[in-house]
Each structure stands twice: as C-alpha cells, then as structure tokens.
Image 1 (cartoon, helix red, strand yellow):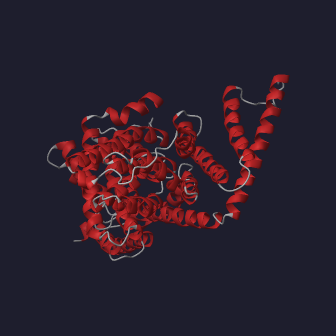
Image 2 (cartoon, rainbow, N blue to C red):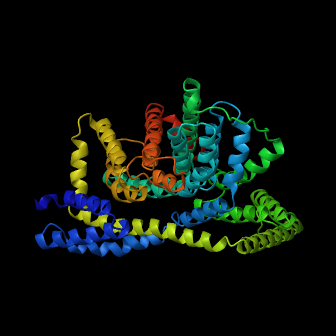
Length: 517
C-alpha cells in the first residue's frame, strides 16, 4: 500500500478539490501531509524539501510570469470600457440580416475580445448579458445561443496573448529542458513564449473558422434554430465599423506583433498592452480626444524611430542628427506621458481604477498561489517516486508513443471536467510532458494540442467555468440543462481541431519555424 502513496496523493487531491476546498491550499496541504506520511514510513527523504525555497524563488523571479498581471490588467480595462457592447452592436448590424449571421457576429466578437482581453469570465458574462437576449428575441435556439457564447468566450485561452499560453510556455519549456537532461544533453534548447504564441495563432483562428462553419451549416439545415433578424437593421458604414474594430485590432497588432517580430519580450509587450488599454479607455471617455490621440501617435512614431535609428547620445561620436532625433524623441515621450496622465485621470474619475486593480490582484493572486503551491505538491510527488510510476505507465501503453500520447490527452480532457486549467498545467504537465518529449513529440506542437485540450475544459460539464459564467449572466428562461447541451457540439468541434492538428502538424509548427527558425 505504501509504495503507492503517489497514486493516493492524486486521489486525495481530487477528492478534496471536488469537496470545494480552496485549490491552492489543498494542493500544498496534500503535499505536506503526504511528505509527513512518506517520511514516517520511510518512503520519502525529507531533505528534498530543502529544494523548496529555491523552487519558490524561481517562480517569484520568473520574468515570463510577470506578463500575467499586465495582460490581466489590460483585459479588465478594455472590458470595463464597454468595448464588447460596441463590437457586438456593430457586428450584429453587419451580419444579422443573413441566416445565422447574428451567431457569426458573436463568434467574431469573441475572437476579437479573446485577442485583446483574454479574460474568459468577462467575455462570457458581457456577451451573455448582451448577445443572448438579442438572439432569443430573434428566435435562436437557446441551446445554440448558449453554446456559441460559451465557446466564443473561451477563445481567449487559445488565441494569443493569453494567460493559459504564458503558463503553458513556462511549464513546457521546463519540461523540454528536463527531457533533454534525461537524454544526456547538456547543450539544451528552449522554447519561448513567442514560439508558443506563434504556434497557437493559426490553430486559434482555425477554431474560429470551424465555429463559423458549424453555425452557418446549422442555420442552413435547421433555419428555425438560427434565423435572420426579424427586423432588418441598417448596415453600419465603414466609419462605424472602423471605430468599433480598429482600436482592439491596433492593440492586438501592437502587443502580439511586437512579440512575434522579436521587438519586445512578452513582459515588455504586456506593458505595452496595459498602457495601450489605458490610452484607449481615456480616448473613449468624455473629454478632449486630441491630446490622447496625439499621445498614441507619438508612441507609434517613437517605436519606429527607435527601430530605425537607435538613440545613443552617450557615445563620443554622436552627431548633430543624433541630438536632433534625441530631442524629437524627448518631445514624443512628453506627449505620450501627458496622454497617459490624462487617460489615468479620466479612468479614475469614471471610477474604473479601483475595480480593475482589485480584480487584477484577485485573479493574479489566484494564479500565482496555485503555481507556487504546485511546487510543493510536485516536489513531494517526485520524492515518492511518482514520476517513475507515470513513466512506467506511459511506456507500457499499447500502441507505443502514440498510445501514450492519446492516453495523456484523454486524461487531461477528463481532468478538465473537474479541475481548472492552472491546476492541470502546473500539477500534471510537469510530470507527463517530459516523458512524451523523450518519446519524440515536438514540444511546440505538443503545447498547442494541450492548449486546445485545456481550452475545452472551460466547456465541459459539470464544472466548466464558462458554463457557470453564462449561468450567472443568462436570462432566467435559459435552463442549466440547455447551457450544458449547447456546449456539447462545441466540445466536439474542439476535439475536431485537435484531430486536424494531429494530422496536419504544420498548422502549429509552420509559423514559429518561419519566425524563430
């Protein structure tokens, strides 16, 4: 019995989490409990706990993870700023007059919000309050309406930049290094957040296309489930479309483009996103728009100048042109600083700062607490020989590496019914991912498949987070059963996306290979 303490650890952990105990404290508590049991019974070397401080310090000083609170702040500012309402209204007028068009609008808005905010709960709640009543008034099937809102809201987990991909890139990079060490390689390669973002971009957009094709096909064969709008709306003009779409697209290009182009690290790009969100919020709030618009233009021009002609006035051979460009850059910085100050003041006056900061602290604390406490659990699990048991199970799977991979993906998918993606990422993946990489699976391709798998965990009953978010925001005439039923087709579409990437590996590997070699 005692030689299976590692297995019993997982059983106790899942049972405790399902009982409703806080995840982070449960993870650490179970680790400490079984460390004590293992030490008393002679199955655990207590000196291993000496490495715990170094592990926790490594997490706290990880520069990649610093991007998480910045991206969360960016998403919350945009969500509080009412960008979802404007996008939905404009897209609804653009596509609503065709059969299934309102559903297409919801999916496209979900994709745009995913790439600009990445906050699943905020996206699902916003669209649940705005889009679902509109679809129901126009005769949409409640199950289809619910499924579209839940599925499009979770696109923020697979379309970069997203918190899931940042955490996943850190976990998979460590797993890749561990796999190379186990193979006797000490001149190791690593994978970066930029590579994972690039790898997830095409699969994420492919998932959007799959959703749209499903909705249009459903509307074609079952017109009563997704009819055209009963009242013909005036199509928006190009100015209205641009004013609704251009700001989030500009922010997406600034953040994601700077990462993929190698101009900025993920943390630097996250700070760009946070400042960009503040400026866009200030631009939309009442007051003079010209100073803030000039500030945004100044930042864009400053980025171009720095890229073309780096400013190094401290050099002895600095020319008059260098000083002229330096003076111009200083004026641009001053203009941007004024715009940022004005935007922050307007946000403060609109009483947005306090709820945004509170939500940022809450979400970030939850994520980091789980990551830190998972270090305790994984250290004890390895000390009890758990990684050796997992390797033995996977290596003896029928079908060789393919069988081990399919078993792992199925295991992650089932865990998604009960656990949050953060818990799965920091507890399960450090154990199974190195083994799969040693078996020959490409780490970037594997990361994308796992990301889509984890994304479906937001839709899987009974504990899918998107389902709970929509339940809180949806009209009372939609039952919980209808929400669950509506999510099932989109779960199947997520599985279809994984199958496509399995057979067409370049969907995940072509873009990172092009950008990073």
